[in-house]
Image (tube, rainbow, N blue to C red; front, side, top):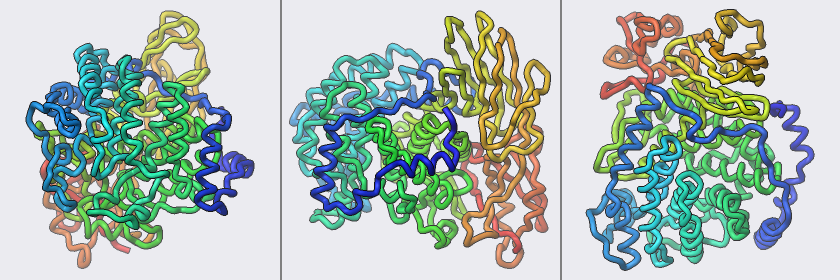
Length: 627
């Protein structure tokens, strides 16, 4: 499959008649959607695919430690506590303690700012999903048994009554839906599909006739502001997945009903409609666009996802790859991203944003073969999610990465927020995000300590990756196979890579196309014990926060953002005595592969660390430099 070059993408766009819907009246749009739901379509099967969860083993390193910690945490969660709000609202006996925070029922809840009792049971489906994926990764029988037990115990609580007066019915159903889908396809639960269908019918009386934007929800009568935050526009992804899993046309009909064409139509035409929208949920909606494309075969939805992700990266992202200060997209050209560094400590909704970012990155890489999506996933991995503080037993969770000029890591004020649910999902997805395959061979997307196993034409193969990347420039692979096998090995060369990047096989440098921003391809007959090594040329660069603040810059080593830590940066008076670009560019690691960096300035030495190495100390990402 050819990658989507800009020319090819525009050619495909010219062949897509997507603009007619703009002139339709709302009732015509709904009628058209119902016609689409029942009309035959040409489903899309990408030639590039992820491996199964159990085919990628994470080896010792920060990713493996995060996954193991989350797996153990959720495996140990008390089941009565998890099921309590569902049992209470179904009128059943509900033993066990309250979870607290967002998760439990609080009759005194009357809207923000205190969100205790906000959306009872909201993240149950995410915890179920994380456990089902963890079982798929590890094969742990206790994990599979817990998933199946939770589904069995949840089933009798399913009722429409649960959603009476509920703040975010679509939001919670979507997560429940994901958990039951994953319990079925990853944990082998034979009852999950029937429970999912019952849960779907239970929520239907509480959903609007179509996807509603937050602006439309604010215009409706409501008791408090929290009723205006539902996310019906994210429903199509899981509804289409349920349709593909079960073949039940009911899910397909509902998925089409909740496609937010008012969002996707302008995006498909190249109009940036992100500003002002809630950040995470509207990135999450890109995955609904991709499932709409894959099931319905309509290129409009692919265009919307590609253009939306381009706008995200080019006009909304920090040097870390994170986005959405205060959970809102900002107007390009306004300087609001830079201004947020002085106004907010809630810069990036990290576990949720990383989960959504990885998800849409996988979809787009599989369809387009474009390595830039891997570049983006790499940036978010090393600069955001790997630096998240662990969940605490009482539900205290890391929520926001802080990029303020005087920043510090901390926990969210409320227990069991949304990021407590996406955290186990993203860590379970690390492996399937690292490697892809097609009929010709494999793609190495992320450089992480790991082992991939697969078979080809009867041969059994494994590829073991050993690396301290991105803190060290060297990555090495060892291939084991029970017979000589021909396939293509494609290695992502990041867009930032310098000209001295070298690839060698069995100690011999190869004359290959190592163009940055592409997958380098090695096609050969591979033998047992072959070794492949990549030596990256990793440059230091300075990246401005936005075009309106060209002298407010972050220091980066390849994709890795370096944060000033300690007290050196606090002594600086940016107005009276700013740093120079040369001072930042003279930063060096204290030793080869060290996570500690240092540079000299006119007021003394400044220390730097990557986000994952920062503990309780204050830090700063962006620095004012001389004009």
